[in-house]
Image 1 (cartoon, one colour):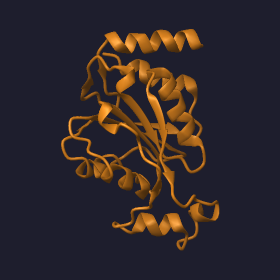
Image 2: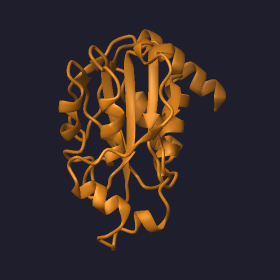
Image 3: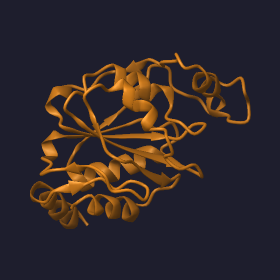
Length: 192
């Protein structure tokens, strides 16, 4: 498997990449250099983390976890309770949960794979915090998400206004239990 991932990473250096959205194929990543790829993700339960790890392995990119200053508890994520932290944040357009740490050398990355779970049909508000903390001008952003049932929908589109000058490619939704094979197939399909 390591040999396959190494070969795939080398192939990504020499072959153009294209976006692989849900039924759409707009945008291109030309000759992506693995040292200039960042795989940034937020994962409250480990599902998105798993997909991000597979993407980093397949692309040779640098993995970066978006860690909340105050971690989410199981009670915070209780979707059936309208008073939980996550529910309140998702309903508040101004909510911006604090992030612990930062990306070193963000200016050195050209491509950012951005991963998150779908919460109430949208990206969690911590993703908004992340995007507002950096300059994405000239960078290409490739969103991906994990969800038990919801698609990626307009979640990424709603993030576009936060990144002036960025080139957004269509995103990909993975199940709440993403497989390495599914992720590798998507990454393989990103080559033009």
